[in-house]
Length: 313
Image (cartoon, rainbow, N blue to C red):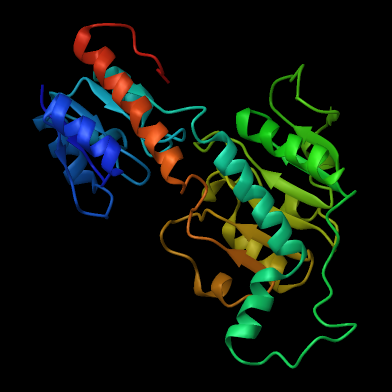
């Protein structure tokens, strides 16, 4: 069985993939282009892809050899799953392993945005801090405030628990289906009401159904003191509309770990002082990446052995 791993893995995962599957591990940090994805599908039995690899519908043209895309990551909007299925290729992902690390980054961004931490760090690094003053860089308190979570899956629930039990926040959430057990005191509300919270956290899956779910109209429902936090997928938020909103001061700030056209971050967004920008750090913890990799390995093992796949999508 020929196996291709499209990105560098952690040492533990790389060792298992090499020893158990004789996998070919790419050392190129760039994602696969459409042509590279098509060639990989033609030349390998199984592929372990990840974020950015271009497995759009056109990649599956012809008669691909591959029968499994064991995706490294919970999100799989870089794969046209319907086209894969039509070509006889199964797709799996790595749910659960990323939950706590991603929720932690959401809280990091809430605190950084509310307390203007990134702005303050830049001030100190530039040598422009003149010392403590009673009115210097006044931010907002997080404890006791209202958080609106858009998407109440594993990550949304983990964010809600941290906000409620850690900071005494009131939690409301919007979800396309009813959530009977959110894991803490919380109310399910329409999207418009969730957008009216002091802090709005985006935690829905990416894909065509949620692209630009948060656009100009939704941003207009946010309060002038509110902060938008996105730890899901960049294209869920209309980036141009968010830039216009931040430039106009219609919301207080934003904390972003993801972007609409990663790794491109618009100069207009980078120039804004009221936005915290992280380089997609949501799951950037070695033990989490180990766990993600081993989940992908389990999917490869099941495929090899003719068993049911543990994590089909």
